[in-house]
Image 1 (cartoon, rainbow, N blue to C red):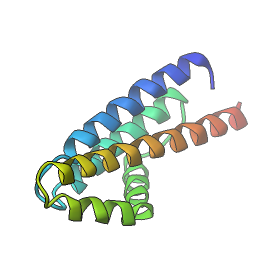
Image 2 (cartoon, one colour):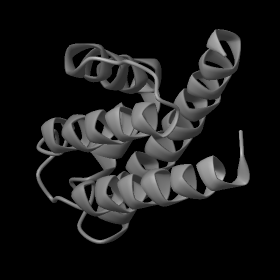
Image 3 (tube, rainbow, N blue to C red):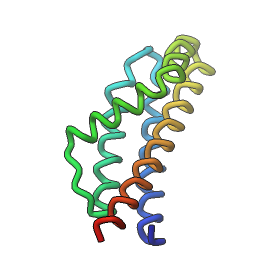
Image 4 (cartoon, helix red, strand yellow):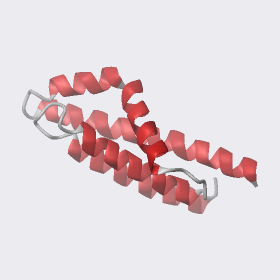
Length: 119
């Protein structure tokens, strides 16, 4: 990964993590899943452009849903904690941002590997 690609990835991933973290602050349990998947989908598609990797929107949506499913325990706990004002919402936001950050770097590293193999 070039330094330019890394900088673009950092911007894309951190912005998505902040956005999902803010979405996770919603006081209504479960109401954040749709917006979080939308932000993660946009992040994945933006990362694919950084590495010039063809990736469809439906694949990106499925990858975002898979990421939430893989972290379902953390996500479920965050939803339960969300019923407690303040601290619970902070936990939901933190978990959403952490999952998004992790997903972003996993995807970026995979796209980097794919782009180097096809070169």
